Amino acid sequence: MAVKHEPPYKVLIIDDSAVVRQTLTGIYSSDPELEVVGTAPDALIALKKLDELKPDVLSLDVQMPRMDGLTFLERLMKSNPMPVVMVSALTTKGSLEALRSLELGAVDIVEKPKLDVREGLEEISIQICDKIKAAAQAKLKTAHQMYLTPTKKLSADAILPVKSSGPNKKVKESLIAIGASTGGTIALRELLVPLPSDMPGIVIVQHMPKAFTKSFSESLDKDCRLKVREACEGEKIERGKVLVSPGDQHMMLKFDGNGYSVTMNNGELVNRHRPSVDVLFRSVANLTGSNSIGVILTGMGDDGAKGLVEMHEAGSRTLAQDEESCVVFGMPRKALENGAVDEVLNIEGISKRLIELS
Image (cartoon, rainbow, N blue to C red; front, side, top):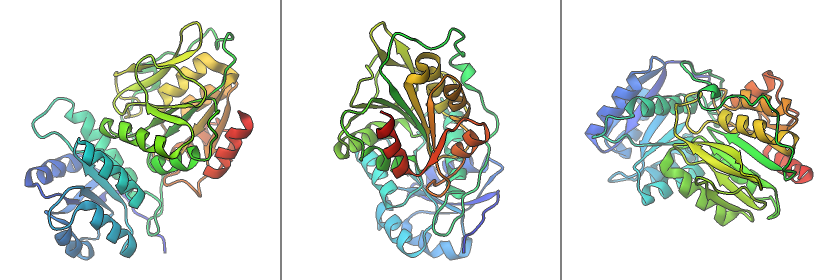
């Protein structure tokens, strides 16, 4: 039977560092929709506390003594599936392990806060809390997804104005813009792997910490016929190439006379995210018009919904992931409510449709 969780969502923190446990407790407790019901220094102690505390979501360290986070996660998903957010350090090993955790069933990954750095802590805290709340509502075997609209947000206007002169008519080459959040890493892999190597250029915003977008891109590149890479300033958008926005920068299109490339911006959070799907979609709407396809995938909140409206109004074809295949049907739901979507399809259907339209 599906379990419906209501805020405040109960969080169990599992980390071998007492200082990290204290820091995360402070971050989660600062959000009125989260309640820290307990902490555990390792996975074995956490197992004993699960029945007693009945948390809605686990905040789980990757590297721990006695039993590492991946082993614990794998066992948990087999015996008692529940929402888990992995908290990982900024290391190459940590990035790879965090990505592996998503394959094992974790809902999301967050960057472990730097204990000696106060700068940017408020932004990091907002993003971590949003991911924990999204995970608590994620659709698992024993958890039914819900839709929650985050508050205290800036729109894409903070980064990029709407262009009044209309799209660029000189470039006929099409491109595909994709936005995703919670559950998006798995959805993107399932979407991209079937695509042939001669697809139009693809630009992607996936809400993910900066340490993990490079590893995620490299992982996709190994599995796909398309070339997948983390985008860098000024990089050309070309057929057969997929560019994934870095985890700490907004990604936008620009036109240089011969074609499209990407430019980066580290401005304010938009819809509580950087990168923001709305920023990417607006830049596509401003420049490409009907020569583009917009795709909005699983995720909490409404980032991308307004931008998809702008793409739709500029003449782009727009697709949304269906509720059944979403981990959290927030972003696609809002896009549908806004009248931004031409077709609603599952991931397999989106892949097939992109091939047909390209």
